[in-house]
Image (cartoon, rainbow, N blue to C red):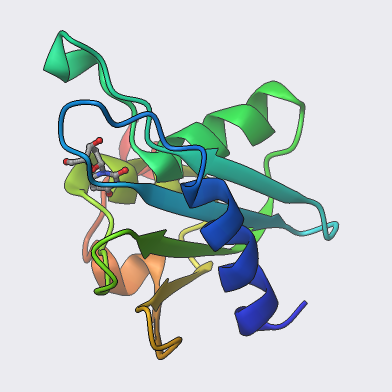
Length: 130
Ligand code: THU
């Protein structure tokens, strides 16, 4: 699976975003170690705090299906600009794929690549709980 293919899955996921409040669609495609791809979109709520970001939707879908090991996640947004994951999503990604890759794509299909660790330096993880 190329970075470009994963981005194209994220673009598909974005079309399903439920965003009546922000009108800001986000799509994520999460690549598991075994090659499965889990799609996620943002799902908003009239009680704004109940909103779930696209990245967490994808992770929670995968984990609830019994998949916990991931290689990479691609993220796109309807703004056409790079959409970096929010702090809560970085924390959730850190739990399952600290060494995993994060691909941010803009509308021109230019891709920025980071590891989750780079996006969350000194992140809090399971090994910190003693
Ligand atoms: N959003 C995401 O889906 N992922 C992020 O990492 C940042 C924000 C969504 C949440 C909300 O539906 C909209 O973008 C505006 O904040």
